[in-house]
Each structure stands twice: as C-alpha cells, then as structure tokens.
Length: 550
Image (spheres, helix red, strand yellow):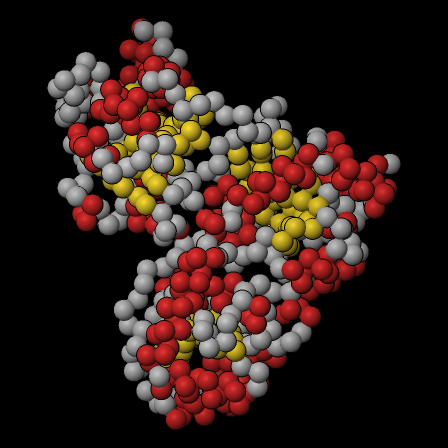
C-alpha cells in the first residue's frame, strides 16, 4: 500500500463489523477480486469476521441494495469525497448513529499539483462532468466547508506530507511572485508540502470523554509491538483518543505540555526500572499535572536486580499497574493493589496455509533463551530426528540448542526482527514451546502459543503457562516429561491428517477469542474508570508513598 493508504487504513476501527470503502470512479478497482493488496486485505487480517465492501463511486448506491439501514460501522471515502458528495445524505443513512466517516482527499495546494498546472498538465477528471466543483482536490478550507455543508461533524484532519527534495527550489523560484501577492513563503511552503488530507467525521456530535494516552517506551524490542505500539494504534482509531509515545531508544524528552486542556491524561511507564530517589521528581511532576500514572509490566520485575534494589518504587508510586498475566498481577498486588490484566493478543491473523498435511514437516523453536527450558528434551528430540531424518528443524537465536541437535537437516537464524520471525514460523508445521516450571516462567504470557496457532504450526508445549490456554489434543499438545515429548512429537510427524486438524482448531480458536481487535477498547474503558476514581487512587498513593507529597 502507498503511504497515504497505510495512514488511511490505520484510521479504520479494527472491530468495525461492516466497512464500506468507496473509491474514485476513475481510479477504482475493476472488481472486488482485483483488489487483493488493498485496505480490505489488511482490515480482514485484523478482523476476519468483519465485512469489507468496496464500491466505485459511480455505482455506490447500486451496490447498497442488500445493506440494512443503520448497520455500517465505517464509511471510507478513498479519493471519492467530491464525487459522492451529492449522495452523502443517502449513504450516511446506512451508517450507524455512532458510525465513523473517513475520507482521503488530495491537496490542491500541493506543489506538484501546482507545477502540473503551470505546465498545462491538470490531472484528468479533476472536475466531474456533471458537477461544478472538484471531485478529487481540496484545500483545507474548502474541505471544512464541504463537511459542514454535508451536515456532518468534523472530528479531526491529518495532513500527509511526503518527501519532496525539490520543494525548496520551487519555493525559491516562486519567491518574487509570492512577494508580489503578499503571501508568506513559510506558510506557502507548509501548505505545499501536504499531498493529502485524511479526515474523520460523524453523523452526530460526540459526547464521549477526550483521552490522551502518553507512554514512555523503555523497551521497544519484542514486547514493544504487543504491549504498546499495536494497542496504541488500535486505540487511536477510537474517536476522542489521542496517543503520544516517548522512546527511550531515540533519546526522546518527556514533555508534559502536549495534552490539550479538554483531555483527561494518562501516563504509562512501560518496563521502566526504578531509580529511587531520582524517580520522585518525575512522579511528582505527573501528579501535579493531573495525570493518571500507570506502570506497565509484562515480565517478572524481579528479573532486574535494579528493580529489587529500589523496592519496586515505580510500581508502588503509580496510581495503578497494568500487566500481561494473572500470575504477574498476583505478585504485583503486594506493592500496588490497583492492578489490571491486559492479556497479550494476536494483532493480525496470518493467511490460511495449504501445506499442513505434508509428510516432510518442519519443526520450529524460536526465542527460547535459557538452557533449563530446553536441555531436558534435547536427547528425546535427537532420537526423534534420527528416527525421521527427513524432518527439518529451524531454530532462531538459541545457538546452544542448535549446536546440541544431532542432525544435518537443521537451519539456524540469529535474533531477527518480528516480521522475519513470523515469516520463518509460517513455513513450519510443528513448534516446540518449552518452559521450565520456574517463578519467572510462570509469569510469562501465552503469546508464543497464539503466534503458533495463527501460523497453523502445531504447538508441542510444556504445561507451564500453556496449560491455561492450550487444550491438549485439540488445539495443541502438552508434554509433562521428556518421554511424553518424544511420543507426541513422533505422533505429530507420523499423522499429518491429525496435525492438520489440530492446526485448524487452534487457528479457529485464536480467530474467535484472541485477536487484539476483540479486546483493544478495554484499555480506554479502564483508563477512564481509573481517572473517574483518581482522587481515591491518589489518597491511596499518599498512604503508600508519603514522600511523593512532601
């Protein structure tokens, strides 16, 4: 997708049951089947049970015959706002009262549009034959006027800027004309840099509270997407919700003046280690600014000695804590009683596979760092690999585990970005998920099982963590000893039909229960509940950490 389409897609609510996208007639796809790499494909990877319908603007009303009034959650106008403007009163009747209208339009002030105009190359179909106004291009002011004329309520407008190395020279060449017309060159350059506008509007004015969620991202690696980036992206699709991230990795400065006066404010410390008494100043500043302070953890904080040395101060000195698992919540409650579990979820459901019943399966192990997790099963695994020499195994990051494998049919991959990790997993048929029964492991989440289920790689897992979500023999296999591991791995290799059945069961389970699109609104709802109770939470905080108020 283009930069503009990618940004447009990020505005569509992931849990929208019915989405209608209307394209400009002059650039619309020939048919639904000709639109594979579209917003539709991206949307359905996040919400496979939703409906995404695509119409050309010239035939939009003709295609709405089977759609019930007040049933559409989101109406996407992709470069078609001008063309469908006369139809908006009719089209919005299909929209739910709380439905959302999203539109992408081109900026008539963009510098390349102006260059084309000067050269006599005005884009085709700029003006619809039957209309006296542009069907594709708008200025910011004309866009606002059009939304108002349609009786809609504007939520916000985003300006999309794209790289333009020749823009500066263009402005310089135009400077005499700008001066003669009394046009400020800086203002003109700012307007000319914008290629598109993205807007959101509603049928009725919103009365929901405005929320500003600011997160300090201390660890952006493997846990960043699942704990911060993806939930934030989804939350940003909720009207009256703004997101702001501060990256430790980039050296970003925490600014506490970015919230708007009418917004309730939440500040989240993601995996931020305590530094007492240095943390007193930052926590006091947040309290004085009226923030709800949240500490976010997805692993046992005792793993970091610094956190123990400073008596878990960041956890104790926050209003509340959000964690990834129930076992982690139980531990954290001794330092802060206000704890909420947001379980890890799968952001996107990969495409179904057609190679599940192969007689040459590939085994996978990725992201297992500690020898105590995998060492007990290595002898059993080597016996299985010797018995089935045609079976290949792929290993990510665990070099010692890889070296211990007594087979030439093995491939090693160093620690890799998440996208590459998922590409590798998608080629495998059986995944090994070993976790020793330790305090640290018991607080981990079942995310690895969700990933295996999504990629239809049958999980052969330890009961630690995975017994809470994996149904033995139905959505995967659990092993309680090396002997059981050996027996069940051999069974999965020898019975491809049963392997496929289990893979399909797990895929359907994660599709129905563990997609982020089914859960992301829980965060905003909880933050608003905690903000409504902030006075009591602050009183508890004063009792728990009195030095914050001295």
